[in-house]
Length: 141
Image 1 (cartoon, helix red, strand yellow):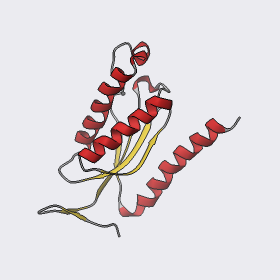
Image 2 (cartoon, helix red, strand yellow):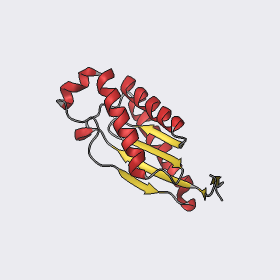
Image 3 (cartoon, one colour):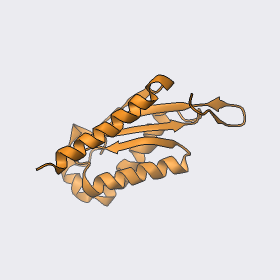
């Protein structure tokens, strides 16, 4: 059984698996851009007291598996993650403006699934496997 976390009046263990994409599903999440996005997501998680269990920034999408307290709805989490990273990435990498013509960096919407005890290991393994498959594909010549 997972360890329950506590606040003054609540015991909880809420975990979410998010998947979200860059606009037009462009394969721009590579190199410095991917590392920057990963750093920003980890920073947002740290200051908002979310616990990242797995994070995989792929070329054309992001898997984020995290835990949060009941005060955070999935839509609030995505607003902070996508909104904050979008603004900063477009400022840090102005060449992306040529691809997106001034529109939003992230596509509208996202996938979120609550993760129960039975699927906890399955989700972690799946996200790790996704990242591993891409790494082996990009390093093989």
